[in-house]
Length: 300
Length: 334
Image 1 (cartoon, chains in turn cyan, yellow):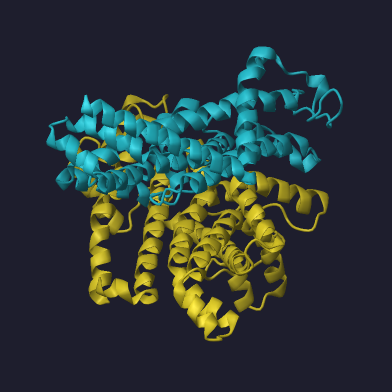
Image 2 (cartoon, rainbow over the protein chains, first blue to last red):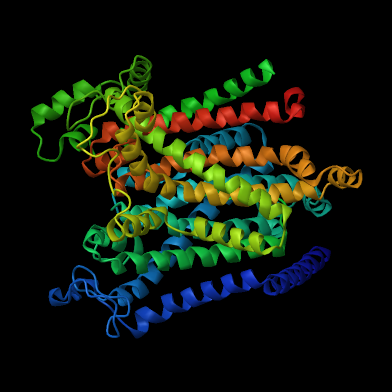
């Protein structure tokens, strides 16, 4: 009984903490802008495929090749006569999915590894953290490219590669979080009454150390979207005719020399909008949650 | 000081071993038989068998690893599948091109990023500060290759001011000694080639510099702001020291540790970014080489170039660690 009372007290304290954090987030203009941008993107990603179905395979109209932006084609058309506005809109769910899934994968694996490392210590800690050091020894983009090169191009492998590259960042945060929180009285109490380590870790430690992981994840969505676009541009990510923004750039940059700037400009702006939104939100969250443990985000 | 350096070097050994194992396993991680992956699906069984012996695939994997490491130390980094040239020879030609580009990009990033960060911190919340930080945020939010393409379109296609691709016009001849074209042209007093190679360098170097520039500016600002809030700064100001001297002489010196770390980490970003930047601008360096090797499934090149880039990255990070000891005497005795 007392145990549940303690936990519900903790939950209440957490709720107040997050409510206050949201208030702080809302009071910052740039964070609010970031939040609006992200909400807008999510809405586009959810609504567009439902309200405006699109089949990228049957979209070419060769008579309409490389048309300048106009009323009928606000972003112009590409070298196969496809409406760029439509393709950019349909690229939103792809990029968001890549960003979210890659981050979810890295967050899950990295957090579990880091928590094991910090909780058990000893040789397990040394082995896990040395492996993390080895991953960090490679420049991130290079490692992602090499992983995709071995596993073959495609969106799934892109997400996998980006996720792998981000694991050490989460592992380090989670490890330092566990090592700090494990000294707290409520953890000692839980240990003393014989609560299983896994319950302690996930029920008592993790919820109290979430802030830095939330910040890191938000910023990593931004870099994951950039990374996915880079891989798409190199022909290693999404494959044509999928309307992925990086792949769209790779399709059309050859036509810059004949003066067709619009097939390159708009997908790039879409990438920038997405990344900027998550960066603004992530910076705002960092200030709002004030987690001193946040390790510098790994930029690509 | 020496013990510190030795300790850092020793700490690198397990990481180096791990890195070499991963790079070695790269060829083995490609699904299917590495020999088939190298020769292509239509290879005859005989040529596959020959390739397997040539690569030593018939030996146990740990023995293959030691052979690989032995070869690396003897300068045998394997051969390109397409051209059959030794990879180490190609590296000698291509690495200076990448190094020239990366150094130029880093110089631009430092020349703009550092002062921008310092001024932003000194005039916190001023118009300059908010503009610079907004631009820096845009800088880290932009796909580098996209910026490169837009710059190329503007300055090369639309305005015709700068060349789009390569390092030197094919009409010009330059005796290369170091492989750094701008340097070689300067040393041989070849002014035409100097101007031309410099013009070729501008667009790719500016493109490649954006992310490090933005990150250096942000990092300089935040670590300097942290120092400016310290008691010693207030004391120094109260004692009537010149503001500029307090800022640059005292606060900046203490703020330089995280900035140096950031610069070191950005070298990794530069080397990775070179893959995209070199591809866009047809810059004949390691980055474009890796990209074309991936497309052609010339895996030994990918393996060799990845090892080289990672070693350079590790070496730079080691230098950063060593520079700590110079910047912060406490680390030496820790």
